[in-house]
Image (cartoon, rainbow, N blue to C red; front, side, top):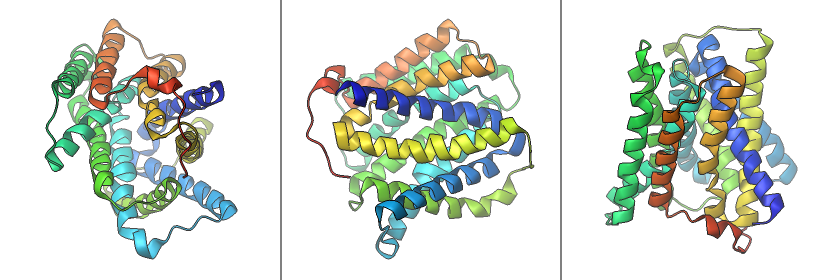
Length: 297
């Protein structure tokens, strides 16, 4: 990986880490469902403009079922669950709980395809559970009403990402840009029937409007484009290492902009969770610097 790719990887982590900050700001005010509906719609419209410029076709007739599955489990459902949890939990805690997604994905893939788990993978799974336990055991958010429901929602979002990963293992091959573009539109329409179930209100506060725009356009639309470019430049495995950097920025943004405290349990729990993810995914930092053959996207 060259210096330019490293900077792009850091930018992507910063954008995805900021998504928890913006959800924490906007969800308690306008409601989780309308926030995520706007996030998906803004990202879909942004990617539509890019698709028109690049002349990328979605092949909707052929892949609409695929887009719906991916749009629900990889976008609409986890986004909604995280936004719901953001009404109670800190941005820092959300970003760390979300980092357990690769653990759930590995576990589900092992169960679905009957793959035996090595001692290293089992150790990683147990480490991830212990890290989450440490985070929750000392977090003051547990004292708030509805905190356990919010925690369950955040972890369910991570499981949903794992389901999407498991599904993708056996799904038809669709280029990454089409996956993102198609799934954003699918998620937008699939979430519409759920809007009446969640309380919502309109806000003209600049902070809320800015959070919604930044969340949809930058943290989703632009972030996806950046992610695809990284896949092309350094390979999918190296690009996925962004999952280790997102919690760092999630904690940092929460501390800088929302005055969220960073306790010893936050740092220790995050390190244990990320260590578990590294064991489960077989992450080796040395692989980042090995030359990779560019992949077409």
